[in-house]
Length: 462
Image 1 (cartoon, rainbow, N blue to C red):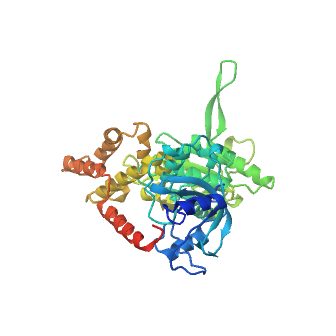
Image 2 (spheres, rainbow, N blue to C red):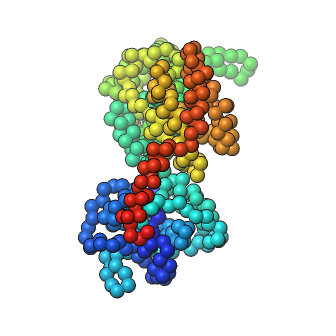
Image 3 (spheres, helix red, strand yellow):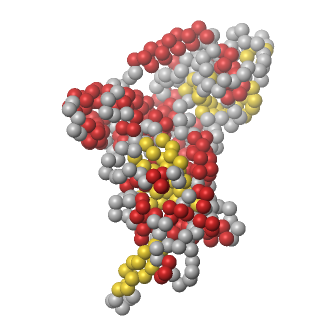
């Protein structure tokens, strides 16, 4: 059901009780528009188009068989839940003229007890057909007492599999990818999602390590380690590091004819001393030298029992994550830099994670996040690299959605680090707090009001 979407479709005007009853009885959504002729209307791709022609196009091409539909009734309350089982068709008779879609009622008992009088008025968009957002769906689940895993895999539209697929294709073509961006933008989470996509979710084909200043070659490739002999004595033995073991696993899979991809994730890439960690692997890691042609002798080659050489197989892909503004690390090694493709992960591109994790609280969180980031970018010494990532707002769960605690315990300390040493630190911090406290965008609210005014003229159903 991963492609199923949930729509709001109004039947002949929300106050047309007669047509509502007829729809329920006939198992057909009767959707009518004035002065709309029978023809194929081109679909613009909008999820909430305003004009009647675009609404019909959405009904014809946007709503798919298998999609779920919430049908609102008087006072815009949710009336019933349905699943589309047939294509649209044009109907013209004495009772009704329009574009119906056939459906089947989803019994509420299938999901739990449901009481109509428990519903609150819904602030649906003033359109006949519209795709529900993830946060709206949370209200839907509560209204119908539906467990979310019963209608699972309804993806957040702002972080679709198409976006993950785009990153996957970048990794496939470049072999080595660095996800860079401001703190809290979800780079590590994104790296894991890309890895899952490339390996079909097989965790045995995904490796993970986090670099830090004391991490070195012996941890990553190979080195001498103290090993107990069991008799109380200790000796040093040559032990493979995490990356070498991972590459050996990928080599073994390839030797047996497997076509599996292996993805190795390096978190906090630039916190490690890159030259010390990779050593002679600078050569092998180059995308043009993958496979046996990139074989090198390791630093401990003289201790190997055989004359083995190390190389990175063609089926190994590397994803690194790094914060651009981390002042505790040196500049990224230029020799390594040219071996990786760098893609910026912005705070705005990842706000969709809030819809999925915060549900009905997501909209306010996104407004506060965007207002705060706009204020940060207006400071001369700062820019978009200093934006606050949406991951910080996931802490709202821990503080029980207390925004003052989120500010004092998580956001303010970070912003103070940003501003340390600036001559107007106190005033700037106050500016940030005022932006964070804003819970609406006046220009956006006015635009919505103007749209709603136009809807009343465009949609005769209302």
